[in-house]
Every structure is written in structure tokens, then in C-alpha cells.
Amino acid sequence: MSVETSAPPAQTEEERQSLGTEAARNLATTTKSEPQMQGISSRWLTRMLPWVNVPGATYRVNRRLAYTLGDGRVSFVKTGAKVQVVPEELGELPPLRGFTDGDALGALAEKFVQKEFEPGQVIVAEGRKADHVYLVAHGKVERIGEGPYGDEVVLGLMADGDAFGGHVLADPGKKWEFTARAATPTTVLALPLTAYKAVADRHEKLREHVRLISSNGHKKLNKSGEAEISLSSGHVGEAPLPQTFADYELHPREYELSVAQTVLRVHSRVADLYNEPMNQTQQQLRLTIEALRERQEHELVNNRDFGMLHNADFDQRISTFSGPPSPDDLDELLSMRRKTRCMFAHPKAIAAFGRECNKRGIYFGGVEVHGNMLPAWRGVPLLPCSKIPVSKQGTSSIIAMRTGEDDQGVIGLYQTGIPDEVEPGLNVRFMGISEKAIISYLVSTYYSAAVLVPDALGILENVQVTRTNGS
Image (cartoon, rainbow, N blue to C red; front, side, top):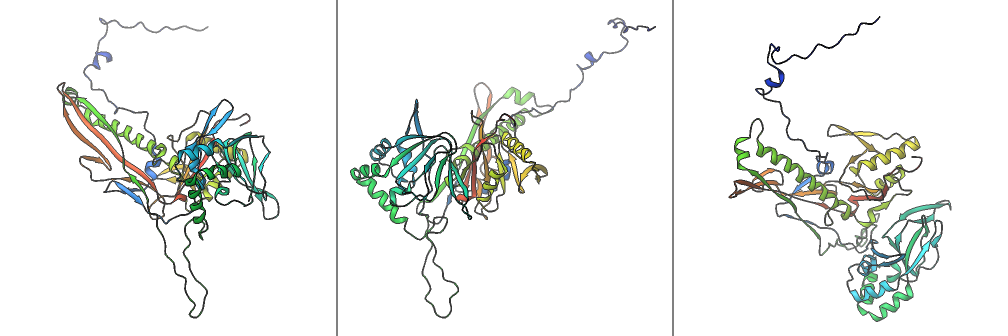
């Protein structure tokens, strides 16, 4: 037999014999946290970049003169099922790089013919005469070659915006050195060589521009497209030595410091009276500076002038083979440069890579970076960067880079010693007090980034981060 017990009745104010906790709190000082902010991220990109002081606010990257131009990316306009190339974008083709005559480019754009290919269909065949320029408007195209034992090997992938066959404009009569085959349903725009000649006959500037590109293309070049420096080795006696020099770019790239700014406003009553236990102005500045640093890293990734995603050379961009980022894809990305120091990916892309490793039974290792254990592949840290966008279609990019001036890598740019500096490259300047007793501070940070040579920065594109059936 169980005995039920009931809780004692609550005491009334008349029955209480000591001070209650609710009343006691009125005399106690609560323990407070500093204002918290969800928008603060690890900012690994900002931490891993070597920062170079730029006293003149402009950084010039001097390089040897290169004569070869890699295929650029072109843009298209889609109207229903019809696709047309934007005429100005044809200037991205190697023989047309730098050509700006709108009339000639417009006439060329009208000559492109839209073609559709199913997966497995051959677009061009190795050994056949190269007499077309092809633009990939949508889909993926495999470049197929012959392996050392006569077997078929995939040399690379081309995706939306890529072009091939541009060399036929400047050097007709060659044969295709590879087979191009559609890997997915693919839409391409094709320009016959005969159509180009018809346009060139009517536009002398176009004809002369392509001729000049063609003459530069006959120079003896190294694998990087620079004029080869003539050397002699293994000779004996008084053999005549070659004469040579290293030429430089006449118009080198210059990076000017960008700026992120805001005006912080604090009412004088708040600044004067409500500073215990924490200084209100300092806390407002701390949160504002964190927001500016987040914007700074966002610009380092996405800015169209100096951001990593837009500053990578087209020859240093590759596409995933099957969609999700596989170990093979990251191996190819790493193989494109020496001394890759770090890779950056959206956390969802890192998770997608982990799933691919799990499928293959491969251990996804880690390394220690600044006291933190982080995921790595082949000993190269794969660092999370939420600033890398994920498209509505669930695709993202993975960035790989070599860093530092000594290694001809990627560097961050800032200027130190600026007036009222509170952090390197960031200052807070008093702007005055308004008639409404509001104190204003101008908070500014100055920054940019530079890629010293093209192979310092590479990007794996079209990385599928969403789960598929069975994954």
C-alpha cells in the first residue's frame, strides 16, 4: 500500500521569515556577457594570407611578357530554347583578345549556329580538320585523347562558357589534337571558318588584329607562354653563345587598395552614463569592426576586380568530373601548381567531399593549423570559408592557392600606420557630435589581394554540394 505525499503549500508573504530571491535581485549586480554576434566566422582566408604593407596604396605586379592567351569564358543570352553569344564576349577568344570593334564582333556573333548533343555524342574527332570554333553554352564536354598504350584517356572537362577551336581563326589548316565528346546533354554554338572569313573580308581591323596575334604565335615560347630565354649547355671549346633577354609586360596589372566603411553613431547620454561594467562605445566599435572584417573577407572572395573567384586565370579552372568533389578532382587541382599551401571550400563542399571519401573507403585526414585540427587532403589543409557562394542549383567552388611573395603566390594587401589606426589597416576617426547629441565615428578598413603569377591560384568549379539519391 503506497502512501501519497503532497508538496507543502507555498508560503505567503506574512509567513516568510527571510528575504526572497526575487527581491534580493534588486540589490544585486548581475554577471553579464559581452554583446554576442552570430555573424562572426573563423575567417581562415584572412588568417592564411600573408599581408604585405603597401605605403603607396597601389601594388604593381611585374611579369615577363607572355604571348599566348588562354581560352576565356564567354556569356550567352537565352530566349526560350534559342541561345546567342554576347558579341562583346567574343573578345575572350584567344585570337580576339583585346579586340573591341563592336560592329565586327556583332557580325561574328550572328554567324554562330546552335547545335545540340546527347551524352556520348562526338562533337569533334581527333585527326579531323579543325574548321570550326565551338562555344559551350550549357553542359559538360570531355576532351578525349590517346593514352600511352593506345587506350582512351580523359584529358579534361569543359563546361558552360568554355570555348575550343579558337586557334583556327589565326592558324587555319590544323587538325584537332583531341576528341570532344558530350558528357551530358550539351548545347554548343559553332562558327564555321568560312563564315569567319566572310566577316573578316568586310572588316579590315578584325583581319589585321588576328594576323598580329598569329605572328606572335610563331615565337619560340616556354610552357608558360613566355618568350623563351636562349641558353646553351653541354658545349666544349669556344662555341658561340646565344644572345637573349627577358622581356616584361608593358602594362602590368596594378591593384589599388579597396575600402569598406561605415559611420558608427552613439548617443552621448549612453556613452557618458552607461559604461559599467562595460564601455558602451568600445563594445559598439568591437561589433562594428567584426562586421567590417567579415565584409573584407567576403570581398577577398567575391569582388569582381580582385576577388579569388574572379581573379583566377582561366587555365587554372577545372570542373568536377561527375558533380560531387571527389579525391580525383582534388588531386587534379593540387597537381596544377607547386607548393599548394591551402584550399578553401564552403562547409557544405567539405561535407560533400567527406561523403565521396566515405564511399571509396578513403580516410579523410587532418592537419594542425594555428593550434586547430582541420580537415586536409594530401597534407594540404581544406579550410572552411562560408563566403564562397553556393548557387541555387547546389553548386559551389573550391579554391587552392600558393601564398607569399617569396613563392610567387597570392598575397593580401593593406597599409599600416594610417591615422587613428586601431588594427593593421583599420582606423576609427572621430567625426563630431550632432545637434542631437549623437557622436559619430568613421570606421574604415583598407585591403586588397594580388595574384603574382597565374598558377598561384586555382579553382575547382561546378562542385555539387547537395545530396543525391543513395548518398
